[in-house]
Image (cartoon, rainbow over all chains, first blue to last red; front, side, top):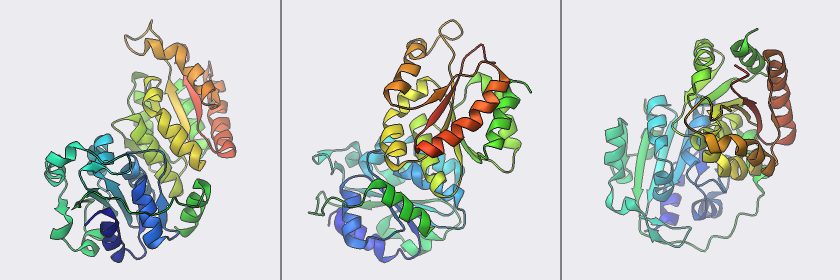
Length: 178
Length: 161
């Protein structure tokens, strides 16, 4: 199972939650699977999906935010683990789809291939750090602390087309939906 | 109105209510004032680029955002400023410590480069030399940033403080 099916499974549990999605194929696949105004498709700033999600969660404490991130992107902004843990917004669920590869850039290996990201998150201090298979995602959304979930998948990209929305439209419809 | 109050009052009158920061010596007192202000959410960050992302999210959540950082941080955040903030037209007020080589043992190369980099990025900036000018510039900078849909900076060098 690759990223596409992981996103499809995640979206089965998403109803009213706000979703911030990682750059590249992850956003394109989400757009094809379940486009909705409550999805923010991030383009051009690899690594920052979790930061955008954190800012949103802190600004909107009454709305739940789900970040769909990738292992390569997490490694690019690992400081975010410290900041999210320290701020600990209980309305943030950070899901890292870990295929051990830079999937949107040619499938080169990431270092996550040999790193257990759940153990990293636990050692940072996250109380809710789990592999996807271990938890019911809906319960995790509404737990009392920020959550960090790793969803291990195989390498592989779908044929999902480029998103035919311009960035301003993505932002404006997202903000209106909040 | 001293140099710190001018920035704080400018931020308040611009209705800035979400601030991320990387420390620099001159803003210690400003950060204390921000931390005591219940209307402002303050998030210390590990790196400037991360702070830019947090501000983008907070803006979509209805907040008016600013980042406090050193000019070295401009180098750490250029892609996020273009490919996130300008791409999606997010406003952002950037308060940048612009100390030079004679005051610090770091950032020497960034001093001359900072205004040139901002110009090359097609971002407006102000360089106030006294508290009265800074108070006006902070408010103007936020309005300009909202109007343009991209970051606007305030450069504060040693002489300002």
